[in-house]
Length: 153
Image (cartoon, rainbow, N blue to C red; front, side, top):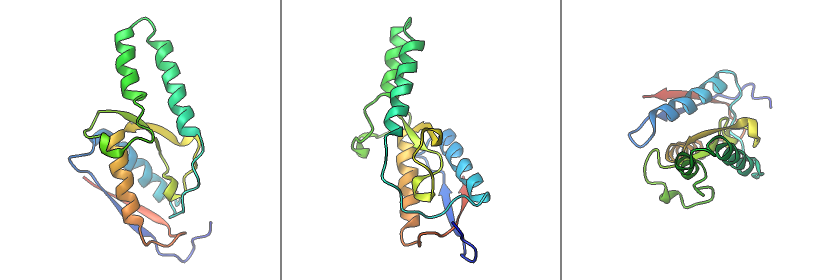
């Protein structure tokens, strides 16, 4: 996509008390790097495919294989990673470290692909709040606008 001549929009990502610091930093730094490389562009997100479901299913399978001799730890891990939060009411995720969910490293709304190699595990609350903040910030920004990320901690 040729964005020559378009003024970039500065997307400010702010660390708040509601966000898990480690996950915020990981996500924000990845987006900042993509922005510096000229890879972030306001885009209409494509229809979602199945990579998130498969990513979760593959992780659950690995947990079951790895912790088969430690049922208590397996149960704890499955609760965190196979929480059934995909598609759940976001108000159900009420605190940090409650659940983990697959997150698009390169946001779909910023030109990222809906593929497994663009996913990482992120604290659910951090993922949902940060994704919502990005969506609100991009409201009214024309498609094709380049995005630069500024991190505020």
